[in-house]
Image 1 (cartoon, rainbow over the protein chains, first blue to last red):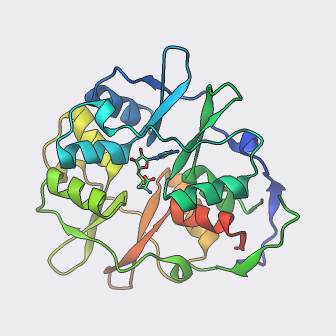
Image 2 (cartoon, rainbow over the protein chains, first blue to last red):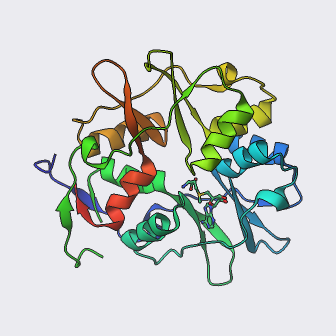
Length: 134
Length: 134
Ligand SMILES: C[S@@+](CC[C@H](N)C(=O)[O-])C[C@H]1O[C@@H](n2cnc3c(N)ncnc32)[C@H](O)[C@@H]1O
């Protein structure tokens, strides 16, 4: 309840970013991508090209879509129109970005489009558990 | 940033619960469960028995596990040791529950174990976007 005091502040995406990022190339199979999600206990997998530039995102929801719609390749199920964040983005701004787009995570990129990490709704929800002041 | 004022309060799970719940019987196939996740744009599917009592939960991450580990039935991938919530649970308490158990959503049950809805990390993260006071 609100009677308990709030703890330290976390204000920017850079304060809570999960790194190093686990990223993959788009040449992997759906089986391999599923294994990476499971082994790392994650739901979001940024997809990068040979220069480590972000070109898409794949989530466990997309794996469920592959099963539901009998899709056989990563290129059929990955999302290319990526919503991303930067380390200097305020946490409430990235929360609204996720909410508006009905997504549960965003890759965090540097100014050259390279992936620095991922921020998820789970990471944000943890701040509520810690009673962080945003 | 913290200079913007916070909005109305959301203090209890009952204030933000997503209902009516989409639930399934454990007799469905992995294909069918995947279709339900995709059609409803969700990641969490409570599994109920014939009396509508909660007996497990299935997520899109579990579907990825089925793909990764070549599992063929819901009973192999559903989680039976369910962490749940109630409408009168404070939001920061359910956030800590998810965080400690490394899960992204919990079914909300009534005192008879019937599913009323689901609360996810995405729902909690939205509160940050709305600058809700918890
Ligand atoms: C619209 S959400 C619906 C389910 C749920 N809200 C979630 O985020 O898992 C699922 C789709 O969003 C896509 N997606 C997830 N994160 C994204 C991001 N940062 N940018 C663009 N698309 C994203 C996924 O590839 C997937 O196809």
